[in-house]
Amino acid sequence: MDVKFEVLVNDRAIQERQHESRKYILVQKGQEYKLRVSNYKSRRVLAVISVDGLSIMNGQPGDILSSAGYIINPNQSIDIPGWRLNNDEVAKFYFSSIDESYTHLIEKPTNIGVIGCAFFAEKEKITPSGIVISGKSKFGWRGGVEKQTVGTGFGQVQNHHVTEIEFERESKPFYIHIIYYLEDSHSASQPTYKNPFPGCQPPQSWHR
Image: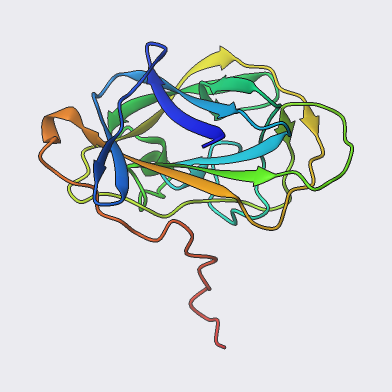
């Protein structure tokens, strides 16, 4: 595969395990982590990432096809240490209890326990180089595990500068990487799959 997505603790990738076709990792509460995205292609790619069903760019669920993401240049890797606060700062990712998780605190705990990255190719068009792209819509993944005991917290502020530019993506991702995570003390459990892309949920008053 000419792109790669990893979860790092202490700057080392956590070994992925597999149950059927589902990838998962074992983690410990209190650990800070980063997400590493690598591009071995000869062209730039866009990485659209969610943690616990929320976009790491704006903390909102939504549509994978138009969310903001990170632009990765050819033969480049970048480390993403947290939830985007602005163009200069992030709030660090760390594995937390469910009650301390960001999704629980903002009352959107449906998808705790899953991290996802969708890779998009760039349409044939010359654009300036840069790191981060503005999206018009929101983005989210849907997934989770049974008896989930660990989530991702909204940690301390860290400097992490990006530049906002335009990127015209292809209509569909060429690769999607989904990682479930479980607390190490619950290693006997196995991840339970839910649809990562359920689409928009209609309001209760909506009818076809």
